[in-house]
Length: 308
Image (cartoon, rainbow, N blue to C red; front, side, top):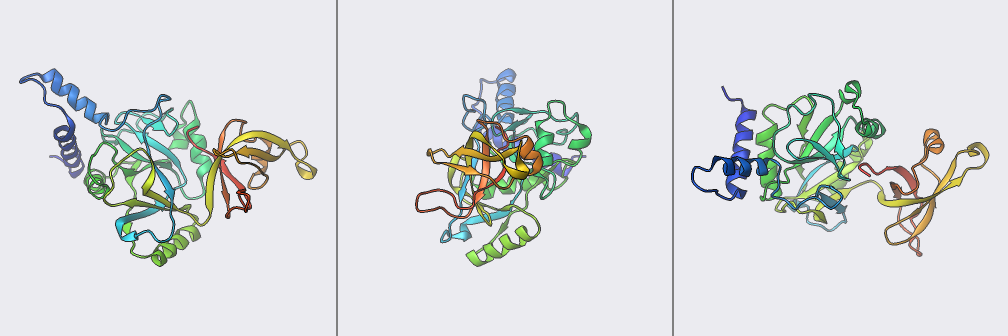
């Protein structure tokens, strides 16, 4: 007997096949198999970059005044972004993610976009686990792949969400689950939800525009909401510490994409000061507005960007 999950997968595969596959010659089974295989790898979306990175939908920062009735709201999970191409997991930077045998056994053979996550406040653990070249089954035991989008579909986000619910909700796998999406009508409701998530140790919220299509790059189709501002910068140099930090990192000299340079001296653990982010790596930092000269106020280190 077919399970609800199996039926959901079959329905989604049939959709992809009829929506995107070019018909082959009559009785050409090899052409049909090739078309089906292509759809399972989700080649209906733009090809990866020259570095092998997947063409991901990226978030812009939420600003008050946007019509929230157009959006679905979910928690922003502090994990590692991962793209499932139907056969393997790939990092944001285009690197294959090595997982223990059986970890992806319940994953459907269609492309998915999601986050590898353990729990709130445990980013360092999941990041370290994902970076292992020889995956540790014990470390991976707590990791789940939280799915929030379906890149191979040409439908709107609302329709993609409905397809994901049919695919994943009837019988969730041991290491895969669908991110819960809800609706919020006002900025006040959004801020109340943000306060609730932040109080529980969460990172923030994500907003997906209901009628939007999956397109690589940043746009208002995907917005992030956090209790603080954050940005990314490249590490230019390590500056030595003084006093109790003698012999360790004192601060980082970093540079933003627009060329703005400044120092970050807070937010590091003692372990991070002993083994700081490498020169050339991309870090995420938080801040509270900018000075009249464009420098971030109260910049503080958050983490090395995953997938770099």
